[in-house]
Amino acid sequence: MSWLFLRSPLLRGALALALALAASGTAAAQAGETKLARDTGRIEVNAMEYPWSAIGRLNIGGRGHCTGFLAGARTVLTAAHCLYDSRRKRWRGVHELHFVAGYQRDTYTIHSPVSDYRRAAKYDPGAAGSADMAQHDWAVLTLAEPIGKQAGWLPLRALDGALLAQVRKGRAQVLQAGYRRGWTQIMSASLDCDIKGFFDDKRGIAHGCDLAEGDSGSPLLILADGVLSAIGLHVLDLQTKSGRFAGALSLAMFRPGSGTAEAVRALRQSGAAWGVGRAPAPGGQAAPAPAETVEILLAELGLMKARSSSRENPERRAAIEAFQARAGLPVTGKASLDLLGHLIAARK
Image (cartoon, rainbow, N blue to C red):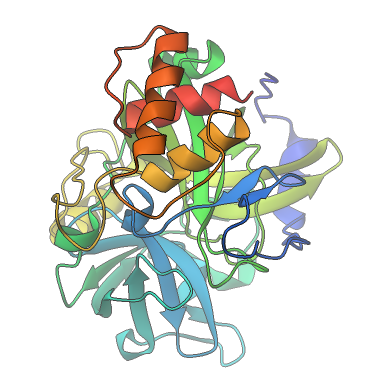
């Protein structure tokens, strides 16, 4: 893994000038096929399974979309630049914003209009794309309905030294998921991510997830010890002289006691709490574990021949048991976030 800490004035200047949204180049796979985009490392995931169900499409005035994610029953985090109408030079009104969780093609049963939002006061739309402005490129939305109770929500976590050490040793996995250009009607996840380092005095996290337009506002995720948390908010996709990488705003700024007063206050006023996540309850519309994603990775490893959308799949159970036995894990036969982490590690 490459560890590049971005401090030089030359590179910071390149970051400030180099916002470039990459084209996806990958069309959605047809139903029934292995949903793996080998040229990007992204796969289609079932948006009605947690943790993907906590990530959704923010539809903006009928003219576009970004990605956002639930951090509480009524709280969504996204990028501030998603809320600015550059054509009319104004900020969007709440009546133009609608958040849909669990959105996959024609599935849109978990959704809510936005009733209020707060954004960083210092965010300047005219400086969008600069590394220095990235620290202000956030917005906290409050939904009219508590749809997080149906979809679940993600805990927020700071990327600290201990967590970085786990990533370097392969004991934690870095992920991203969103609604990118070319896959706008489905959720896809980038499983081949790494941490490149930091920029803007550690307010930004440089990472290697494959991203495109539409991924703005999506979470940078970390799966460690069976818990999946959001550690960053995607705001930049940059091409510099040193290469291409994505930039995420560190969510440490929302942590009480050490974050910025404005961000901490915005999160609290939305009704969300730092570090608290919740999966959907069993038996609800959204499943509490990523069983279909587990199936995709088991099939990639040659442990399954067929896939099923059924929540109780005997072939999946047998394949999970085989993998768990081979990996020296407790044999449960059940899909879980901990199992997902081991499967991602096994494919690298």
